[in-house]
Image 1 (cartoon, rainbow, N blue to C red):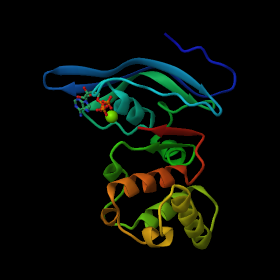
Image 2 (image 1 turned 180 degrees about the vertical axis):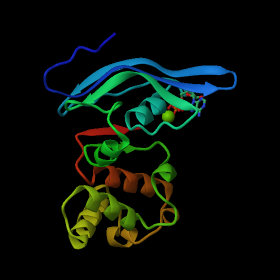
Image 3 (image 1 turned 60 degrees about the vertical axis):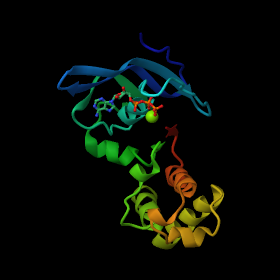
Image 4 (image 1 turned 90 degrees about the vertical axis):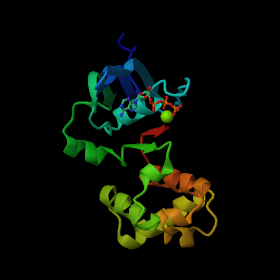
Amino acid sequence: MPASVPGDAVVTVENLQTTFHTRIGPVRAVDGVSYSIGKGETLGIVGESGCGKSVTAFSLMRLIEPPGEITGGAAFLGGENILDVPEERMRELRGSRMAIIFQEPMTAFNPVLTIGYQMDEQITRHLRVSRQESRERAIEMLSLVGIPAPSERYASYPHQLSGGMRQRAMIAMALSCDPEFLIAD
Ligand SMILES: Nc1ncnc2c1ncn2[C@@H]1O[C@H](COP(=O)(O)OP(=O)(O)OP(=O)(O)O)[C@@H](O)[C@H]1O
Ligand SMILES: [Mg+2]
């Protein structure tokens, strides 16, 4: 059923369907998810383990890989159907207008690059700022999420942070370009 679409909705998801094509047949992990979120609104999605929350999140970020496939539905961010735009456009949207805080922080970071390098890569890709401004913004974000000694953490590799700190660093990275739509898995 299509979600009712208020005029000021930031995100509207309509009948999202994601299927995994497995050897024992298709697994319909997400089957008809619809919702709409307005500016400043938060939507909480609850459900038992394995019910499809992460697959829904990955689908909206277009991070589903084979044998998984988005098999139906639409998702509008502004006027664009993000399930339908070219991958190139998706790369512009990801990390800037929409961002995800992954359930597994190790999924978010490349283990061989420092936290700061990865945050700078994202910030300078999407915002018109110098390296120096990017560094300042990254350290400010790390500080805002409550990471002690943020300049040191900026220069750390992911494995040098505790699990909780890695989660915070991931939140800092997701927030660094001020996304309109933030998914917290
Ligand atoms: N690569 C895959 N191949 C087949 N099935 C998959 C694959 N990835 C996910 N699934 C299935 O999709 C379903 C939804 O998984 P998902 O990770 O979205 O659950 P979840 O609601 O996020 O659970 P949790 O609360 O434990 O994080 C599960 O039944 C899972 O087995
Ligand atoms: Mg999950």
